Every structure is written in C-alpha cells, then in structure tokens.
Length: 132
Image (cartoon, rainbow, N blue to C red; front, side, top):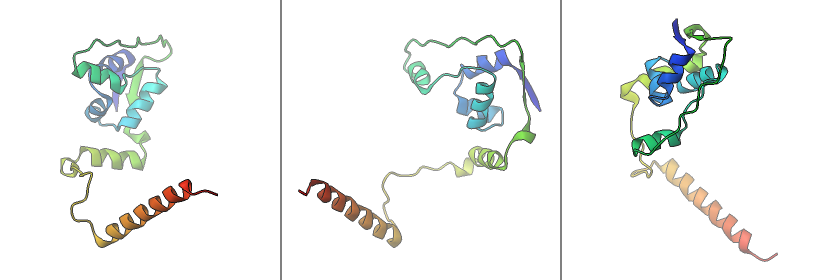
C-alpha cells in the first residue's frame, strides 16, 4: 500500500501528465483520475501540456481546501480485475505497436466489409438527395 499527501499528489500531477504519473504509481489512468476527483484535486487538461510543450504561459488551478483528508492511500486490493489487466497490458513494452490508418494487405473478410460499408454509404447518400 502506498500513501501520499494530497498536496504532494497535487504537486506531481501538475509536473507530468496523468498517463505518465499513473505508470509511476503502478495505477491505470482512470483510477488515478478517480482518486484525484474523489479527493478534490484538480488535474491539468491536455491543452495545459500542449502549451507547456510550445513554451506558452499556463495557469495552474489552485488546490481547494480539504481539511478532512490529507493522506491518500493507494490500495491494490480495491482494483478490479479489469484494472489489473489494463495495467499489465499498458506496462508491457512488447505490446506497444503502431497501427497504420490504412491497411496495406487486408484480409478478404475485411475487403468484403469495406465494400459493403462503402455501398451502404452511397445508398444513404443518394436516398437523402432523391425527391420524395
């Protein structure tokens, strides 16, 4: 079980993206976001990181007062089976692969499906423009 103060989690959440921080804490992104939401810890949005990358000025949301709970515990026991599976897949370097936007040599089943989808799109397009 890991324990971190609310202030420390807030500080590191504004130093690196949630996806990176979650890996370091051995959590999945959605679980870390839920922990932050439950503890009233604001997180930067994607625009924040884009501005940082391009050297633009950014504003950091202040940490709201929360006097009732300053320690946050990360208990692996409360993870679901899906969380464990997602974490193991995300952390496996061998499973990081690039999917191209266009198939170079699709299977016959995929080719047939593409033809059917294109045909359906054409039918819907022409039906939409036809007079009633």
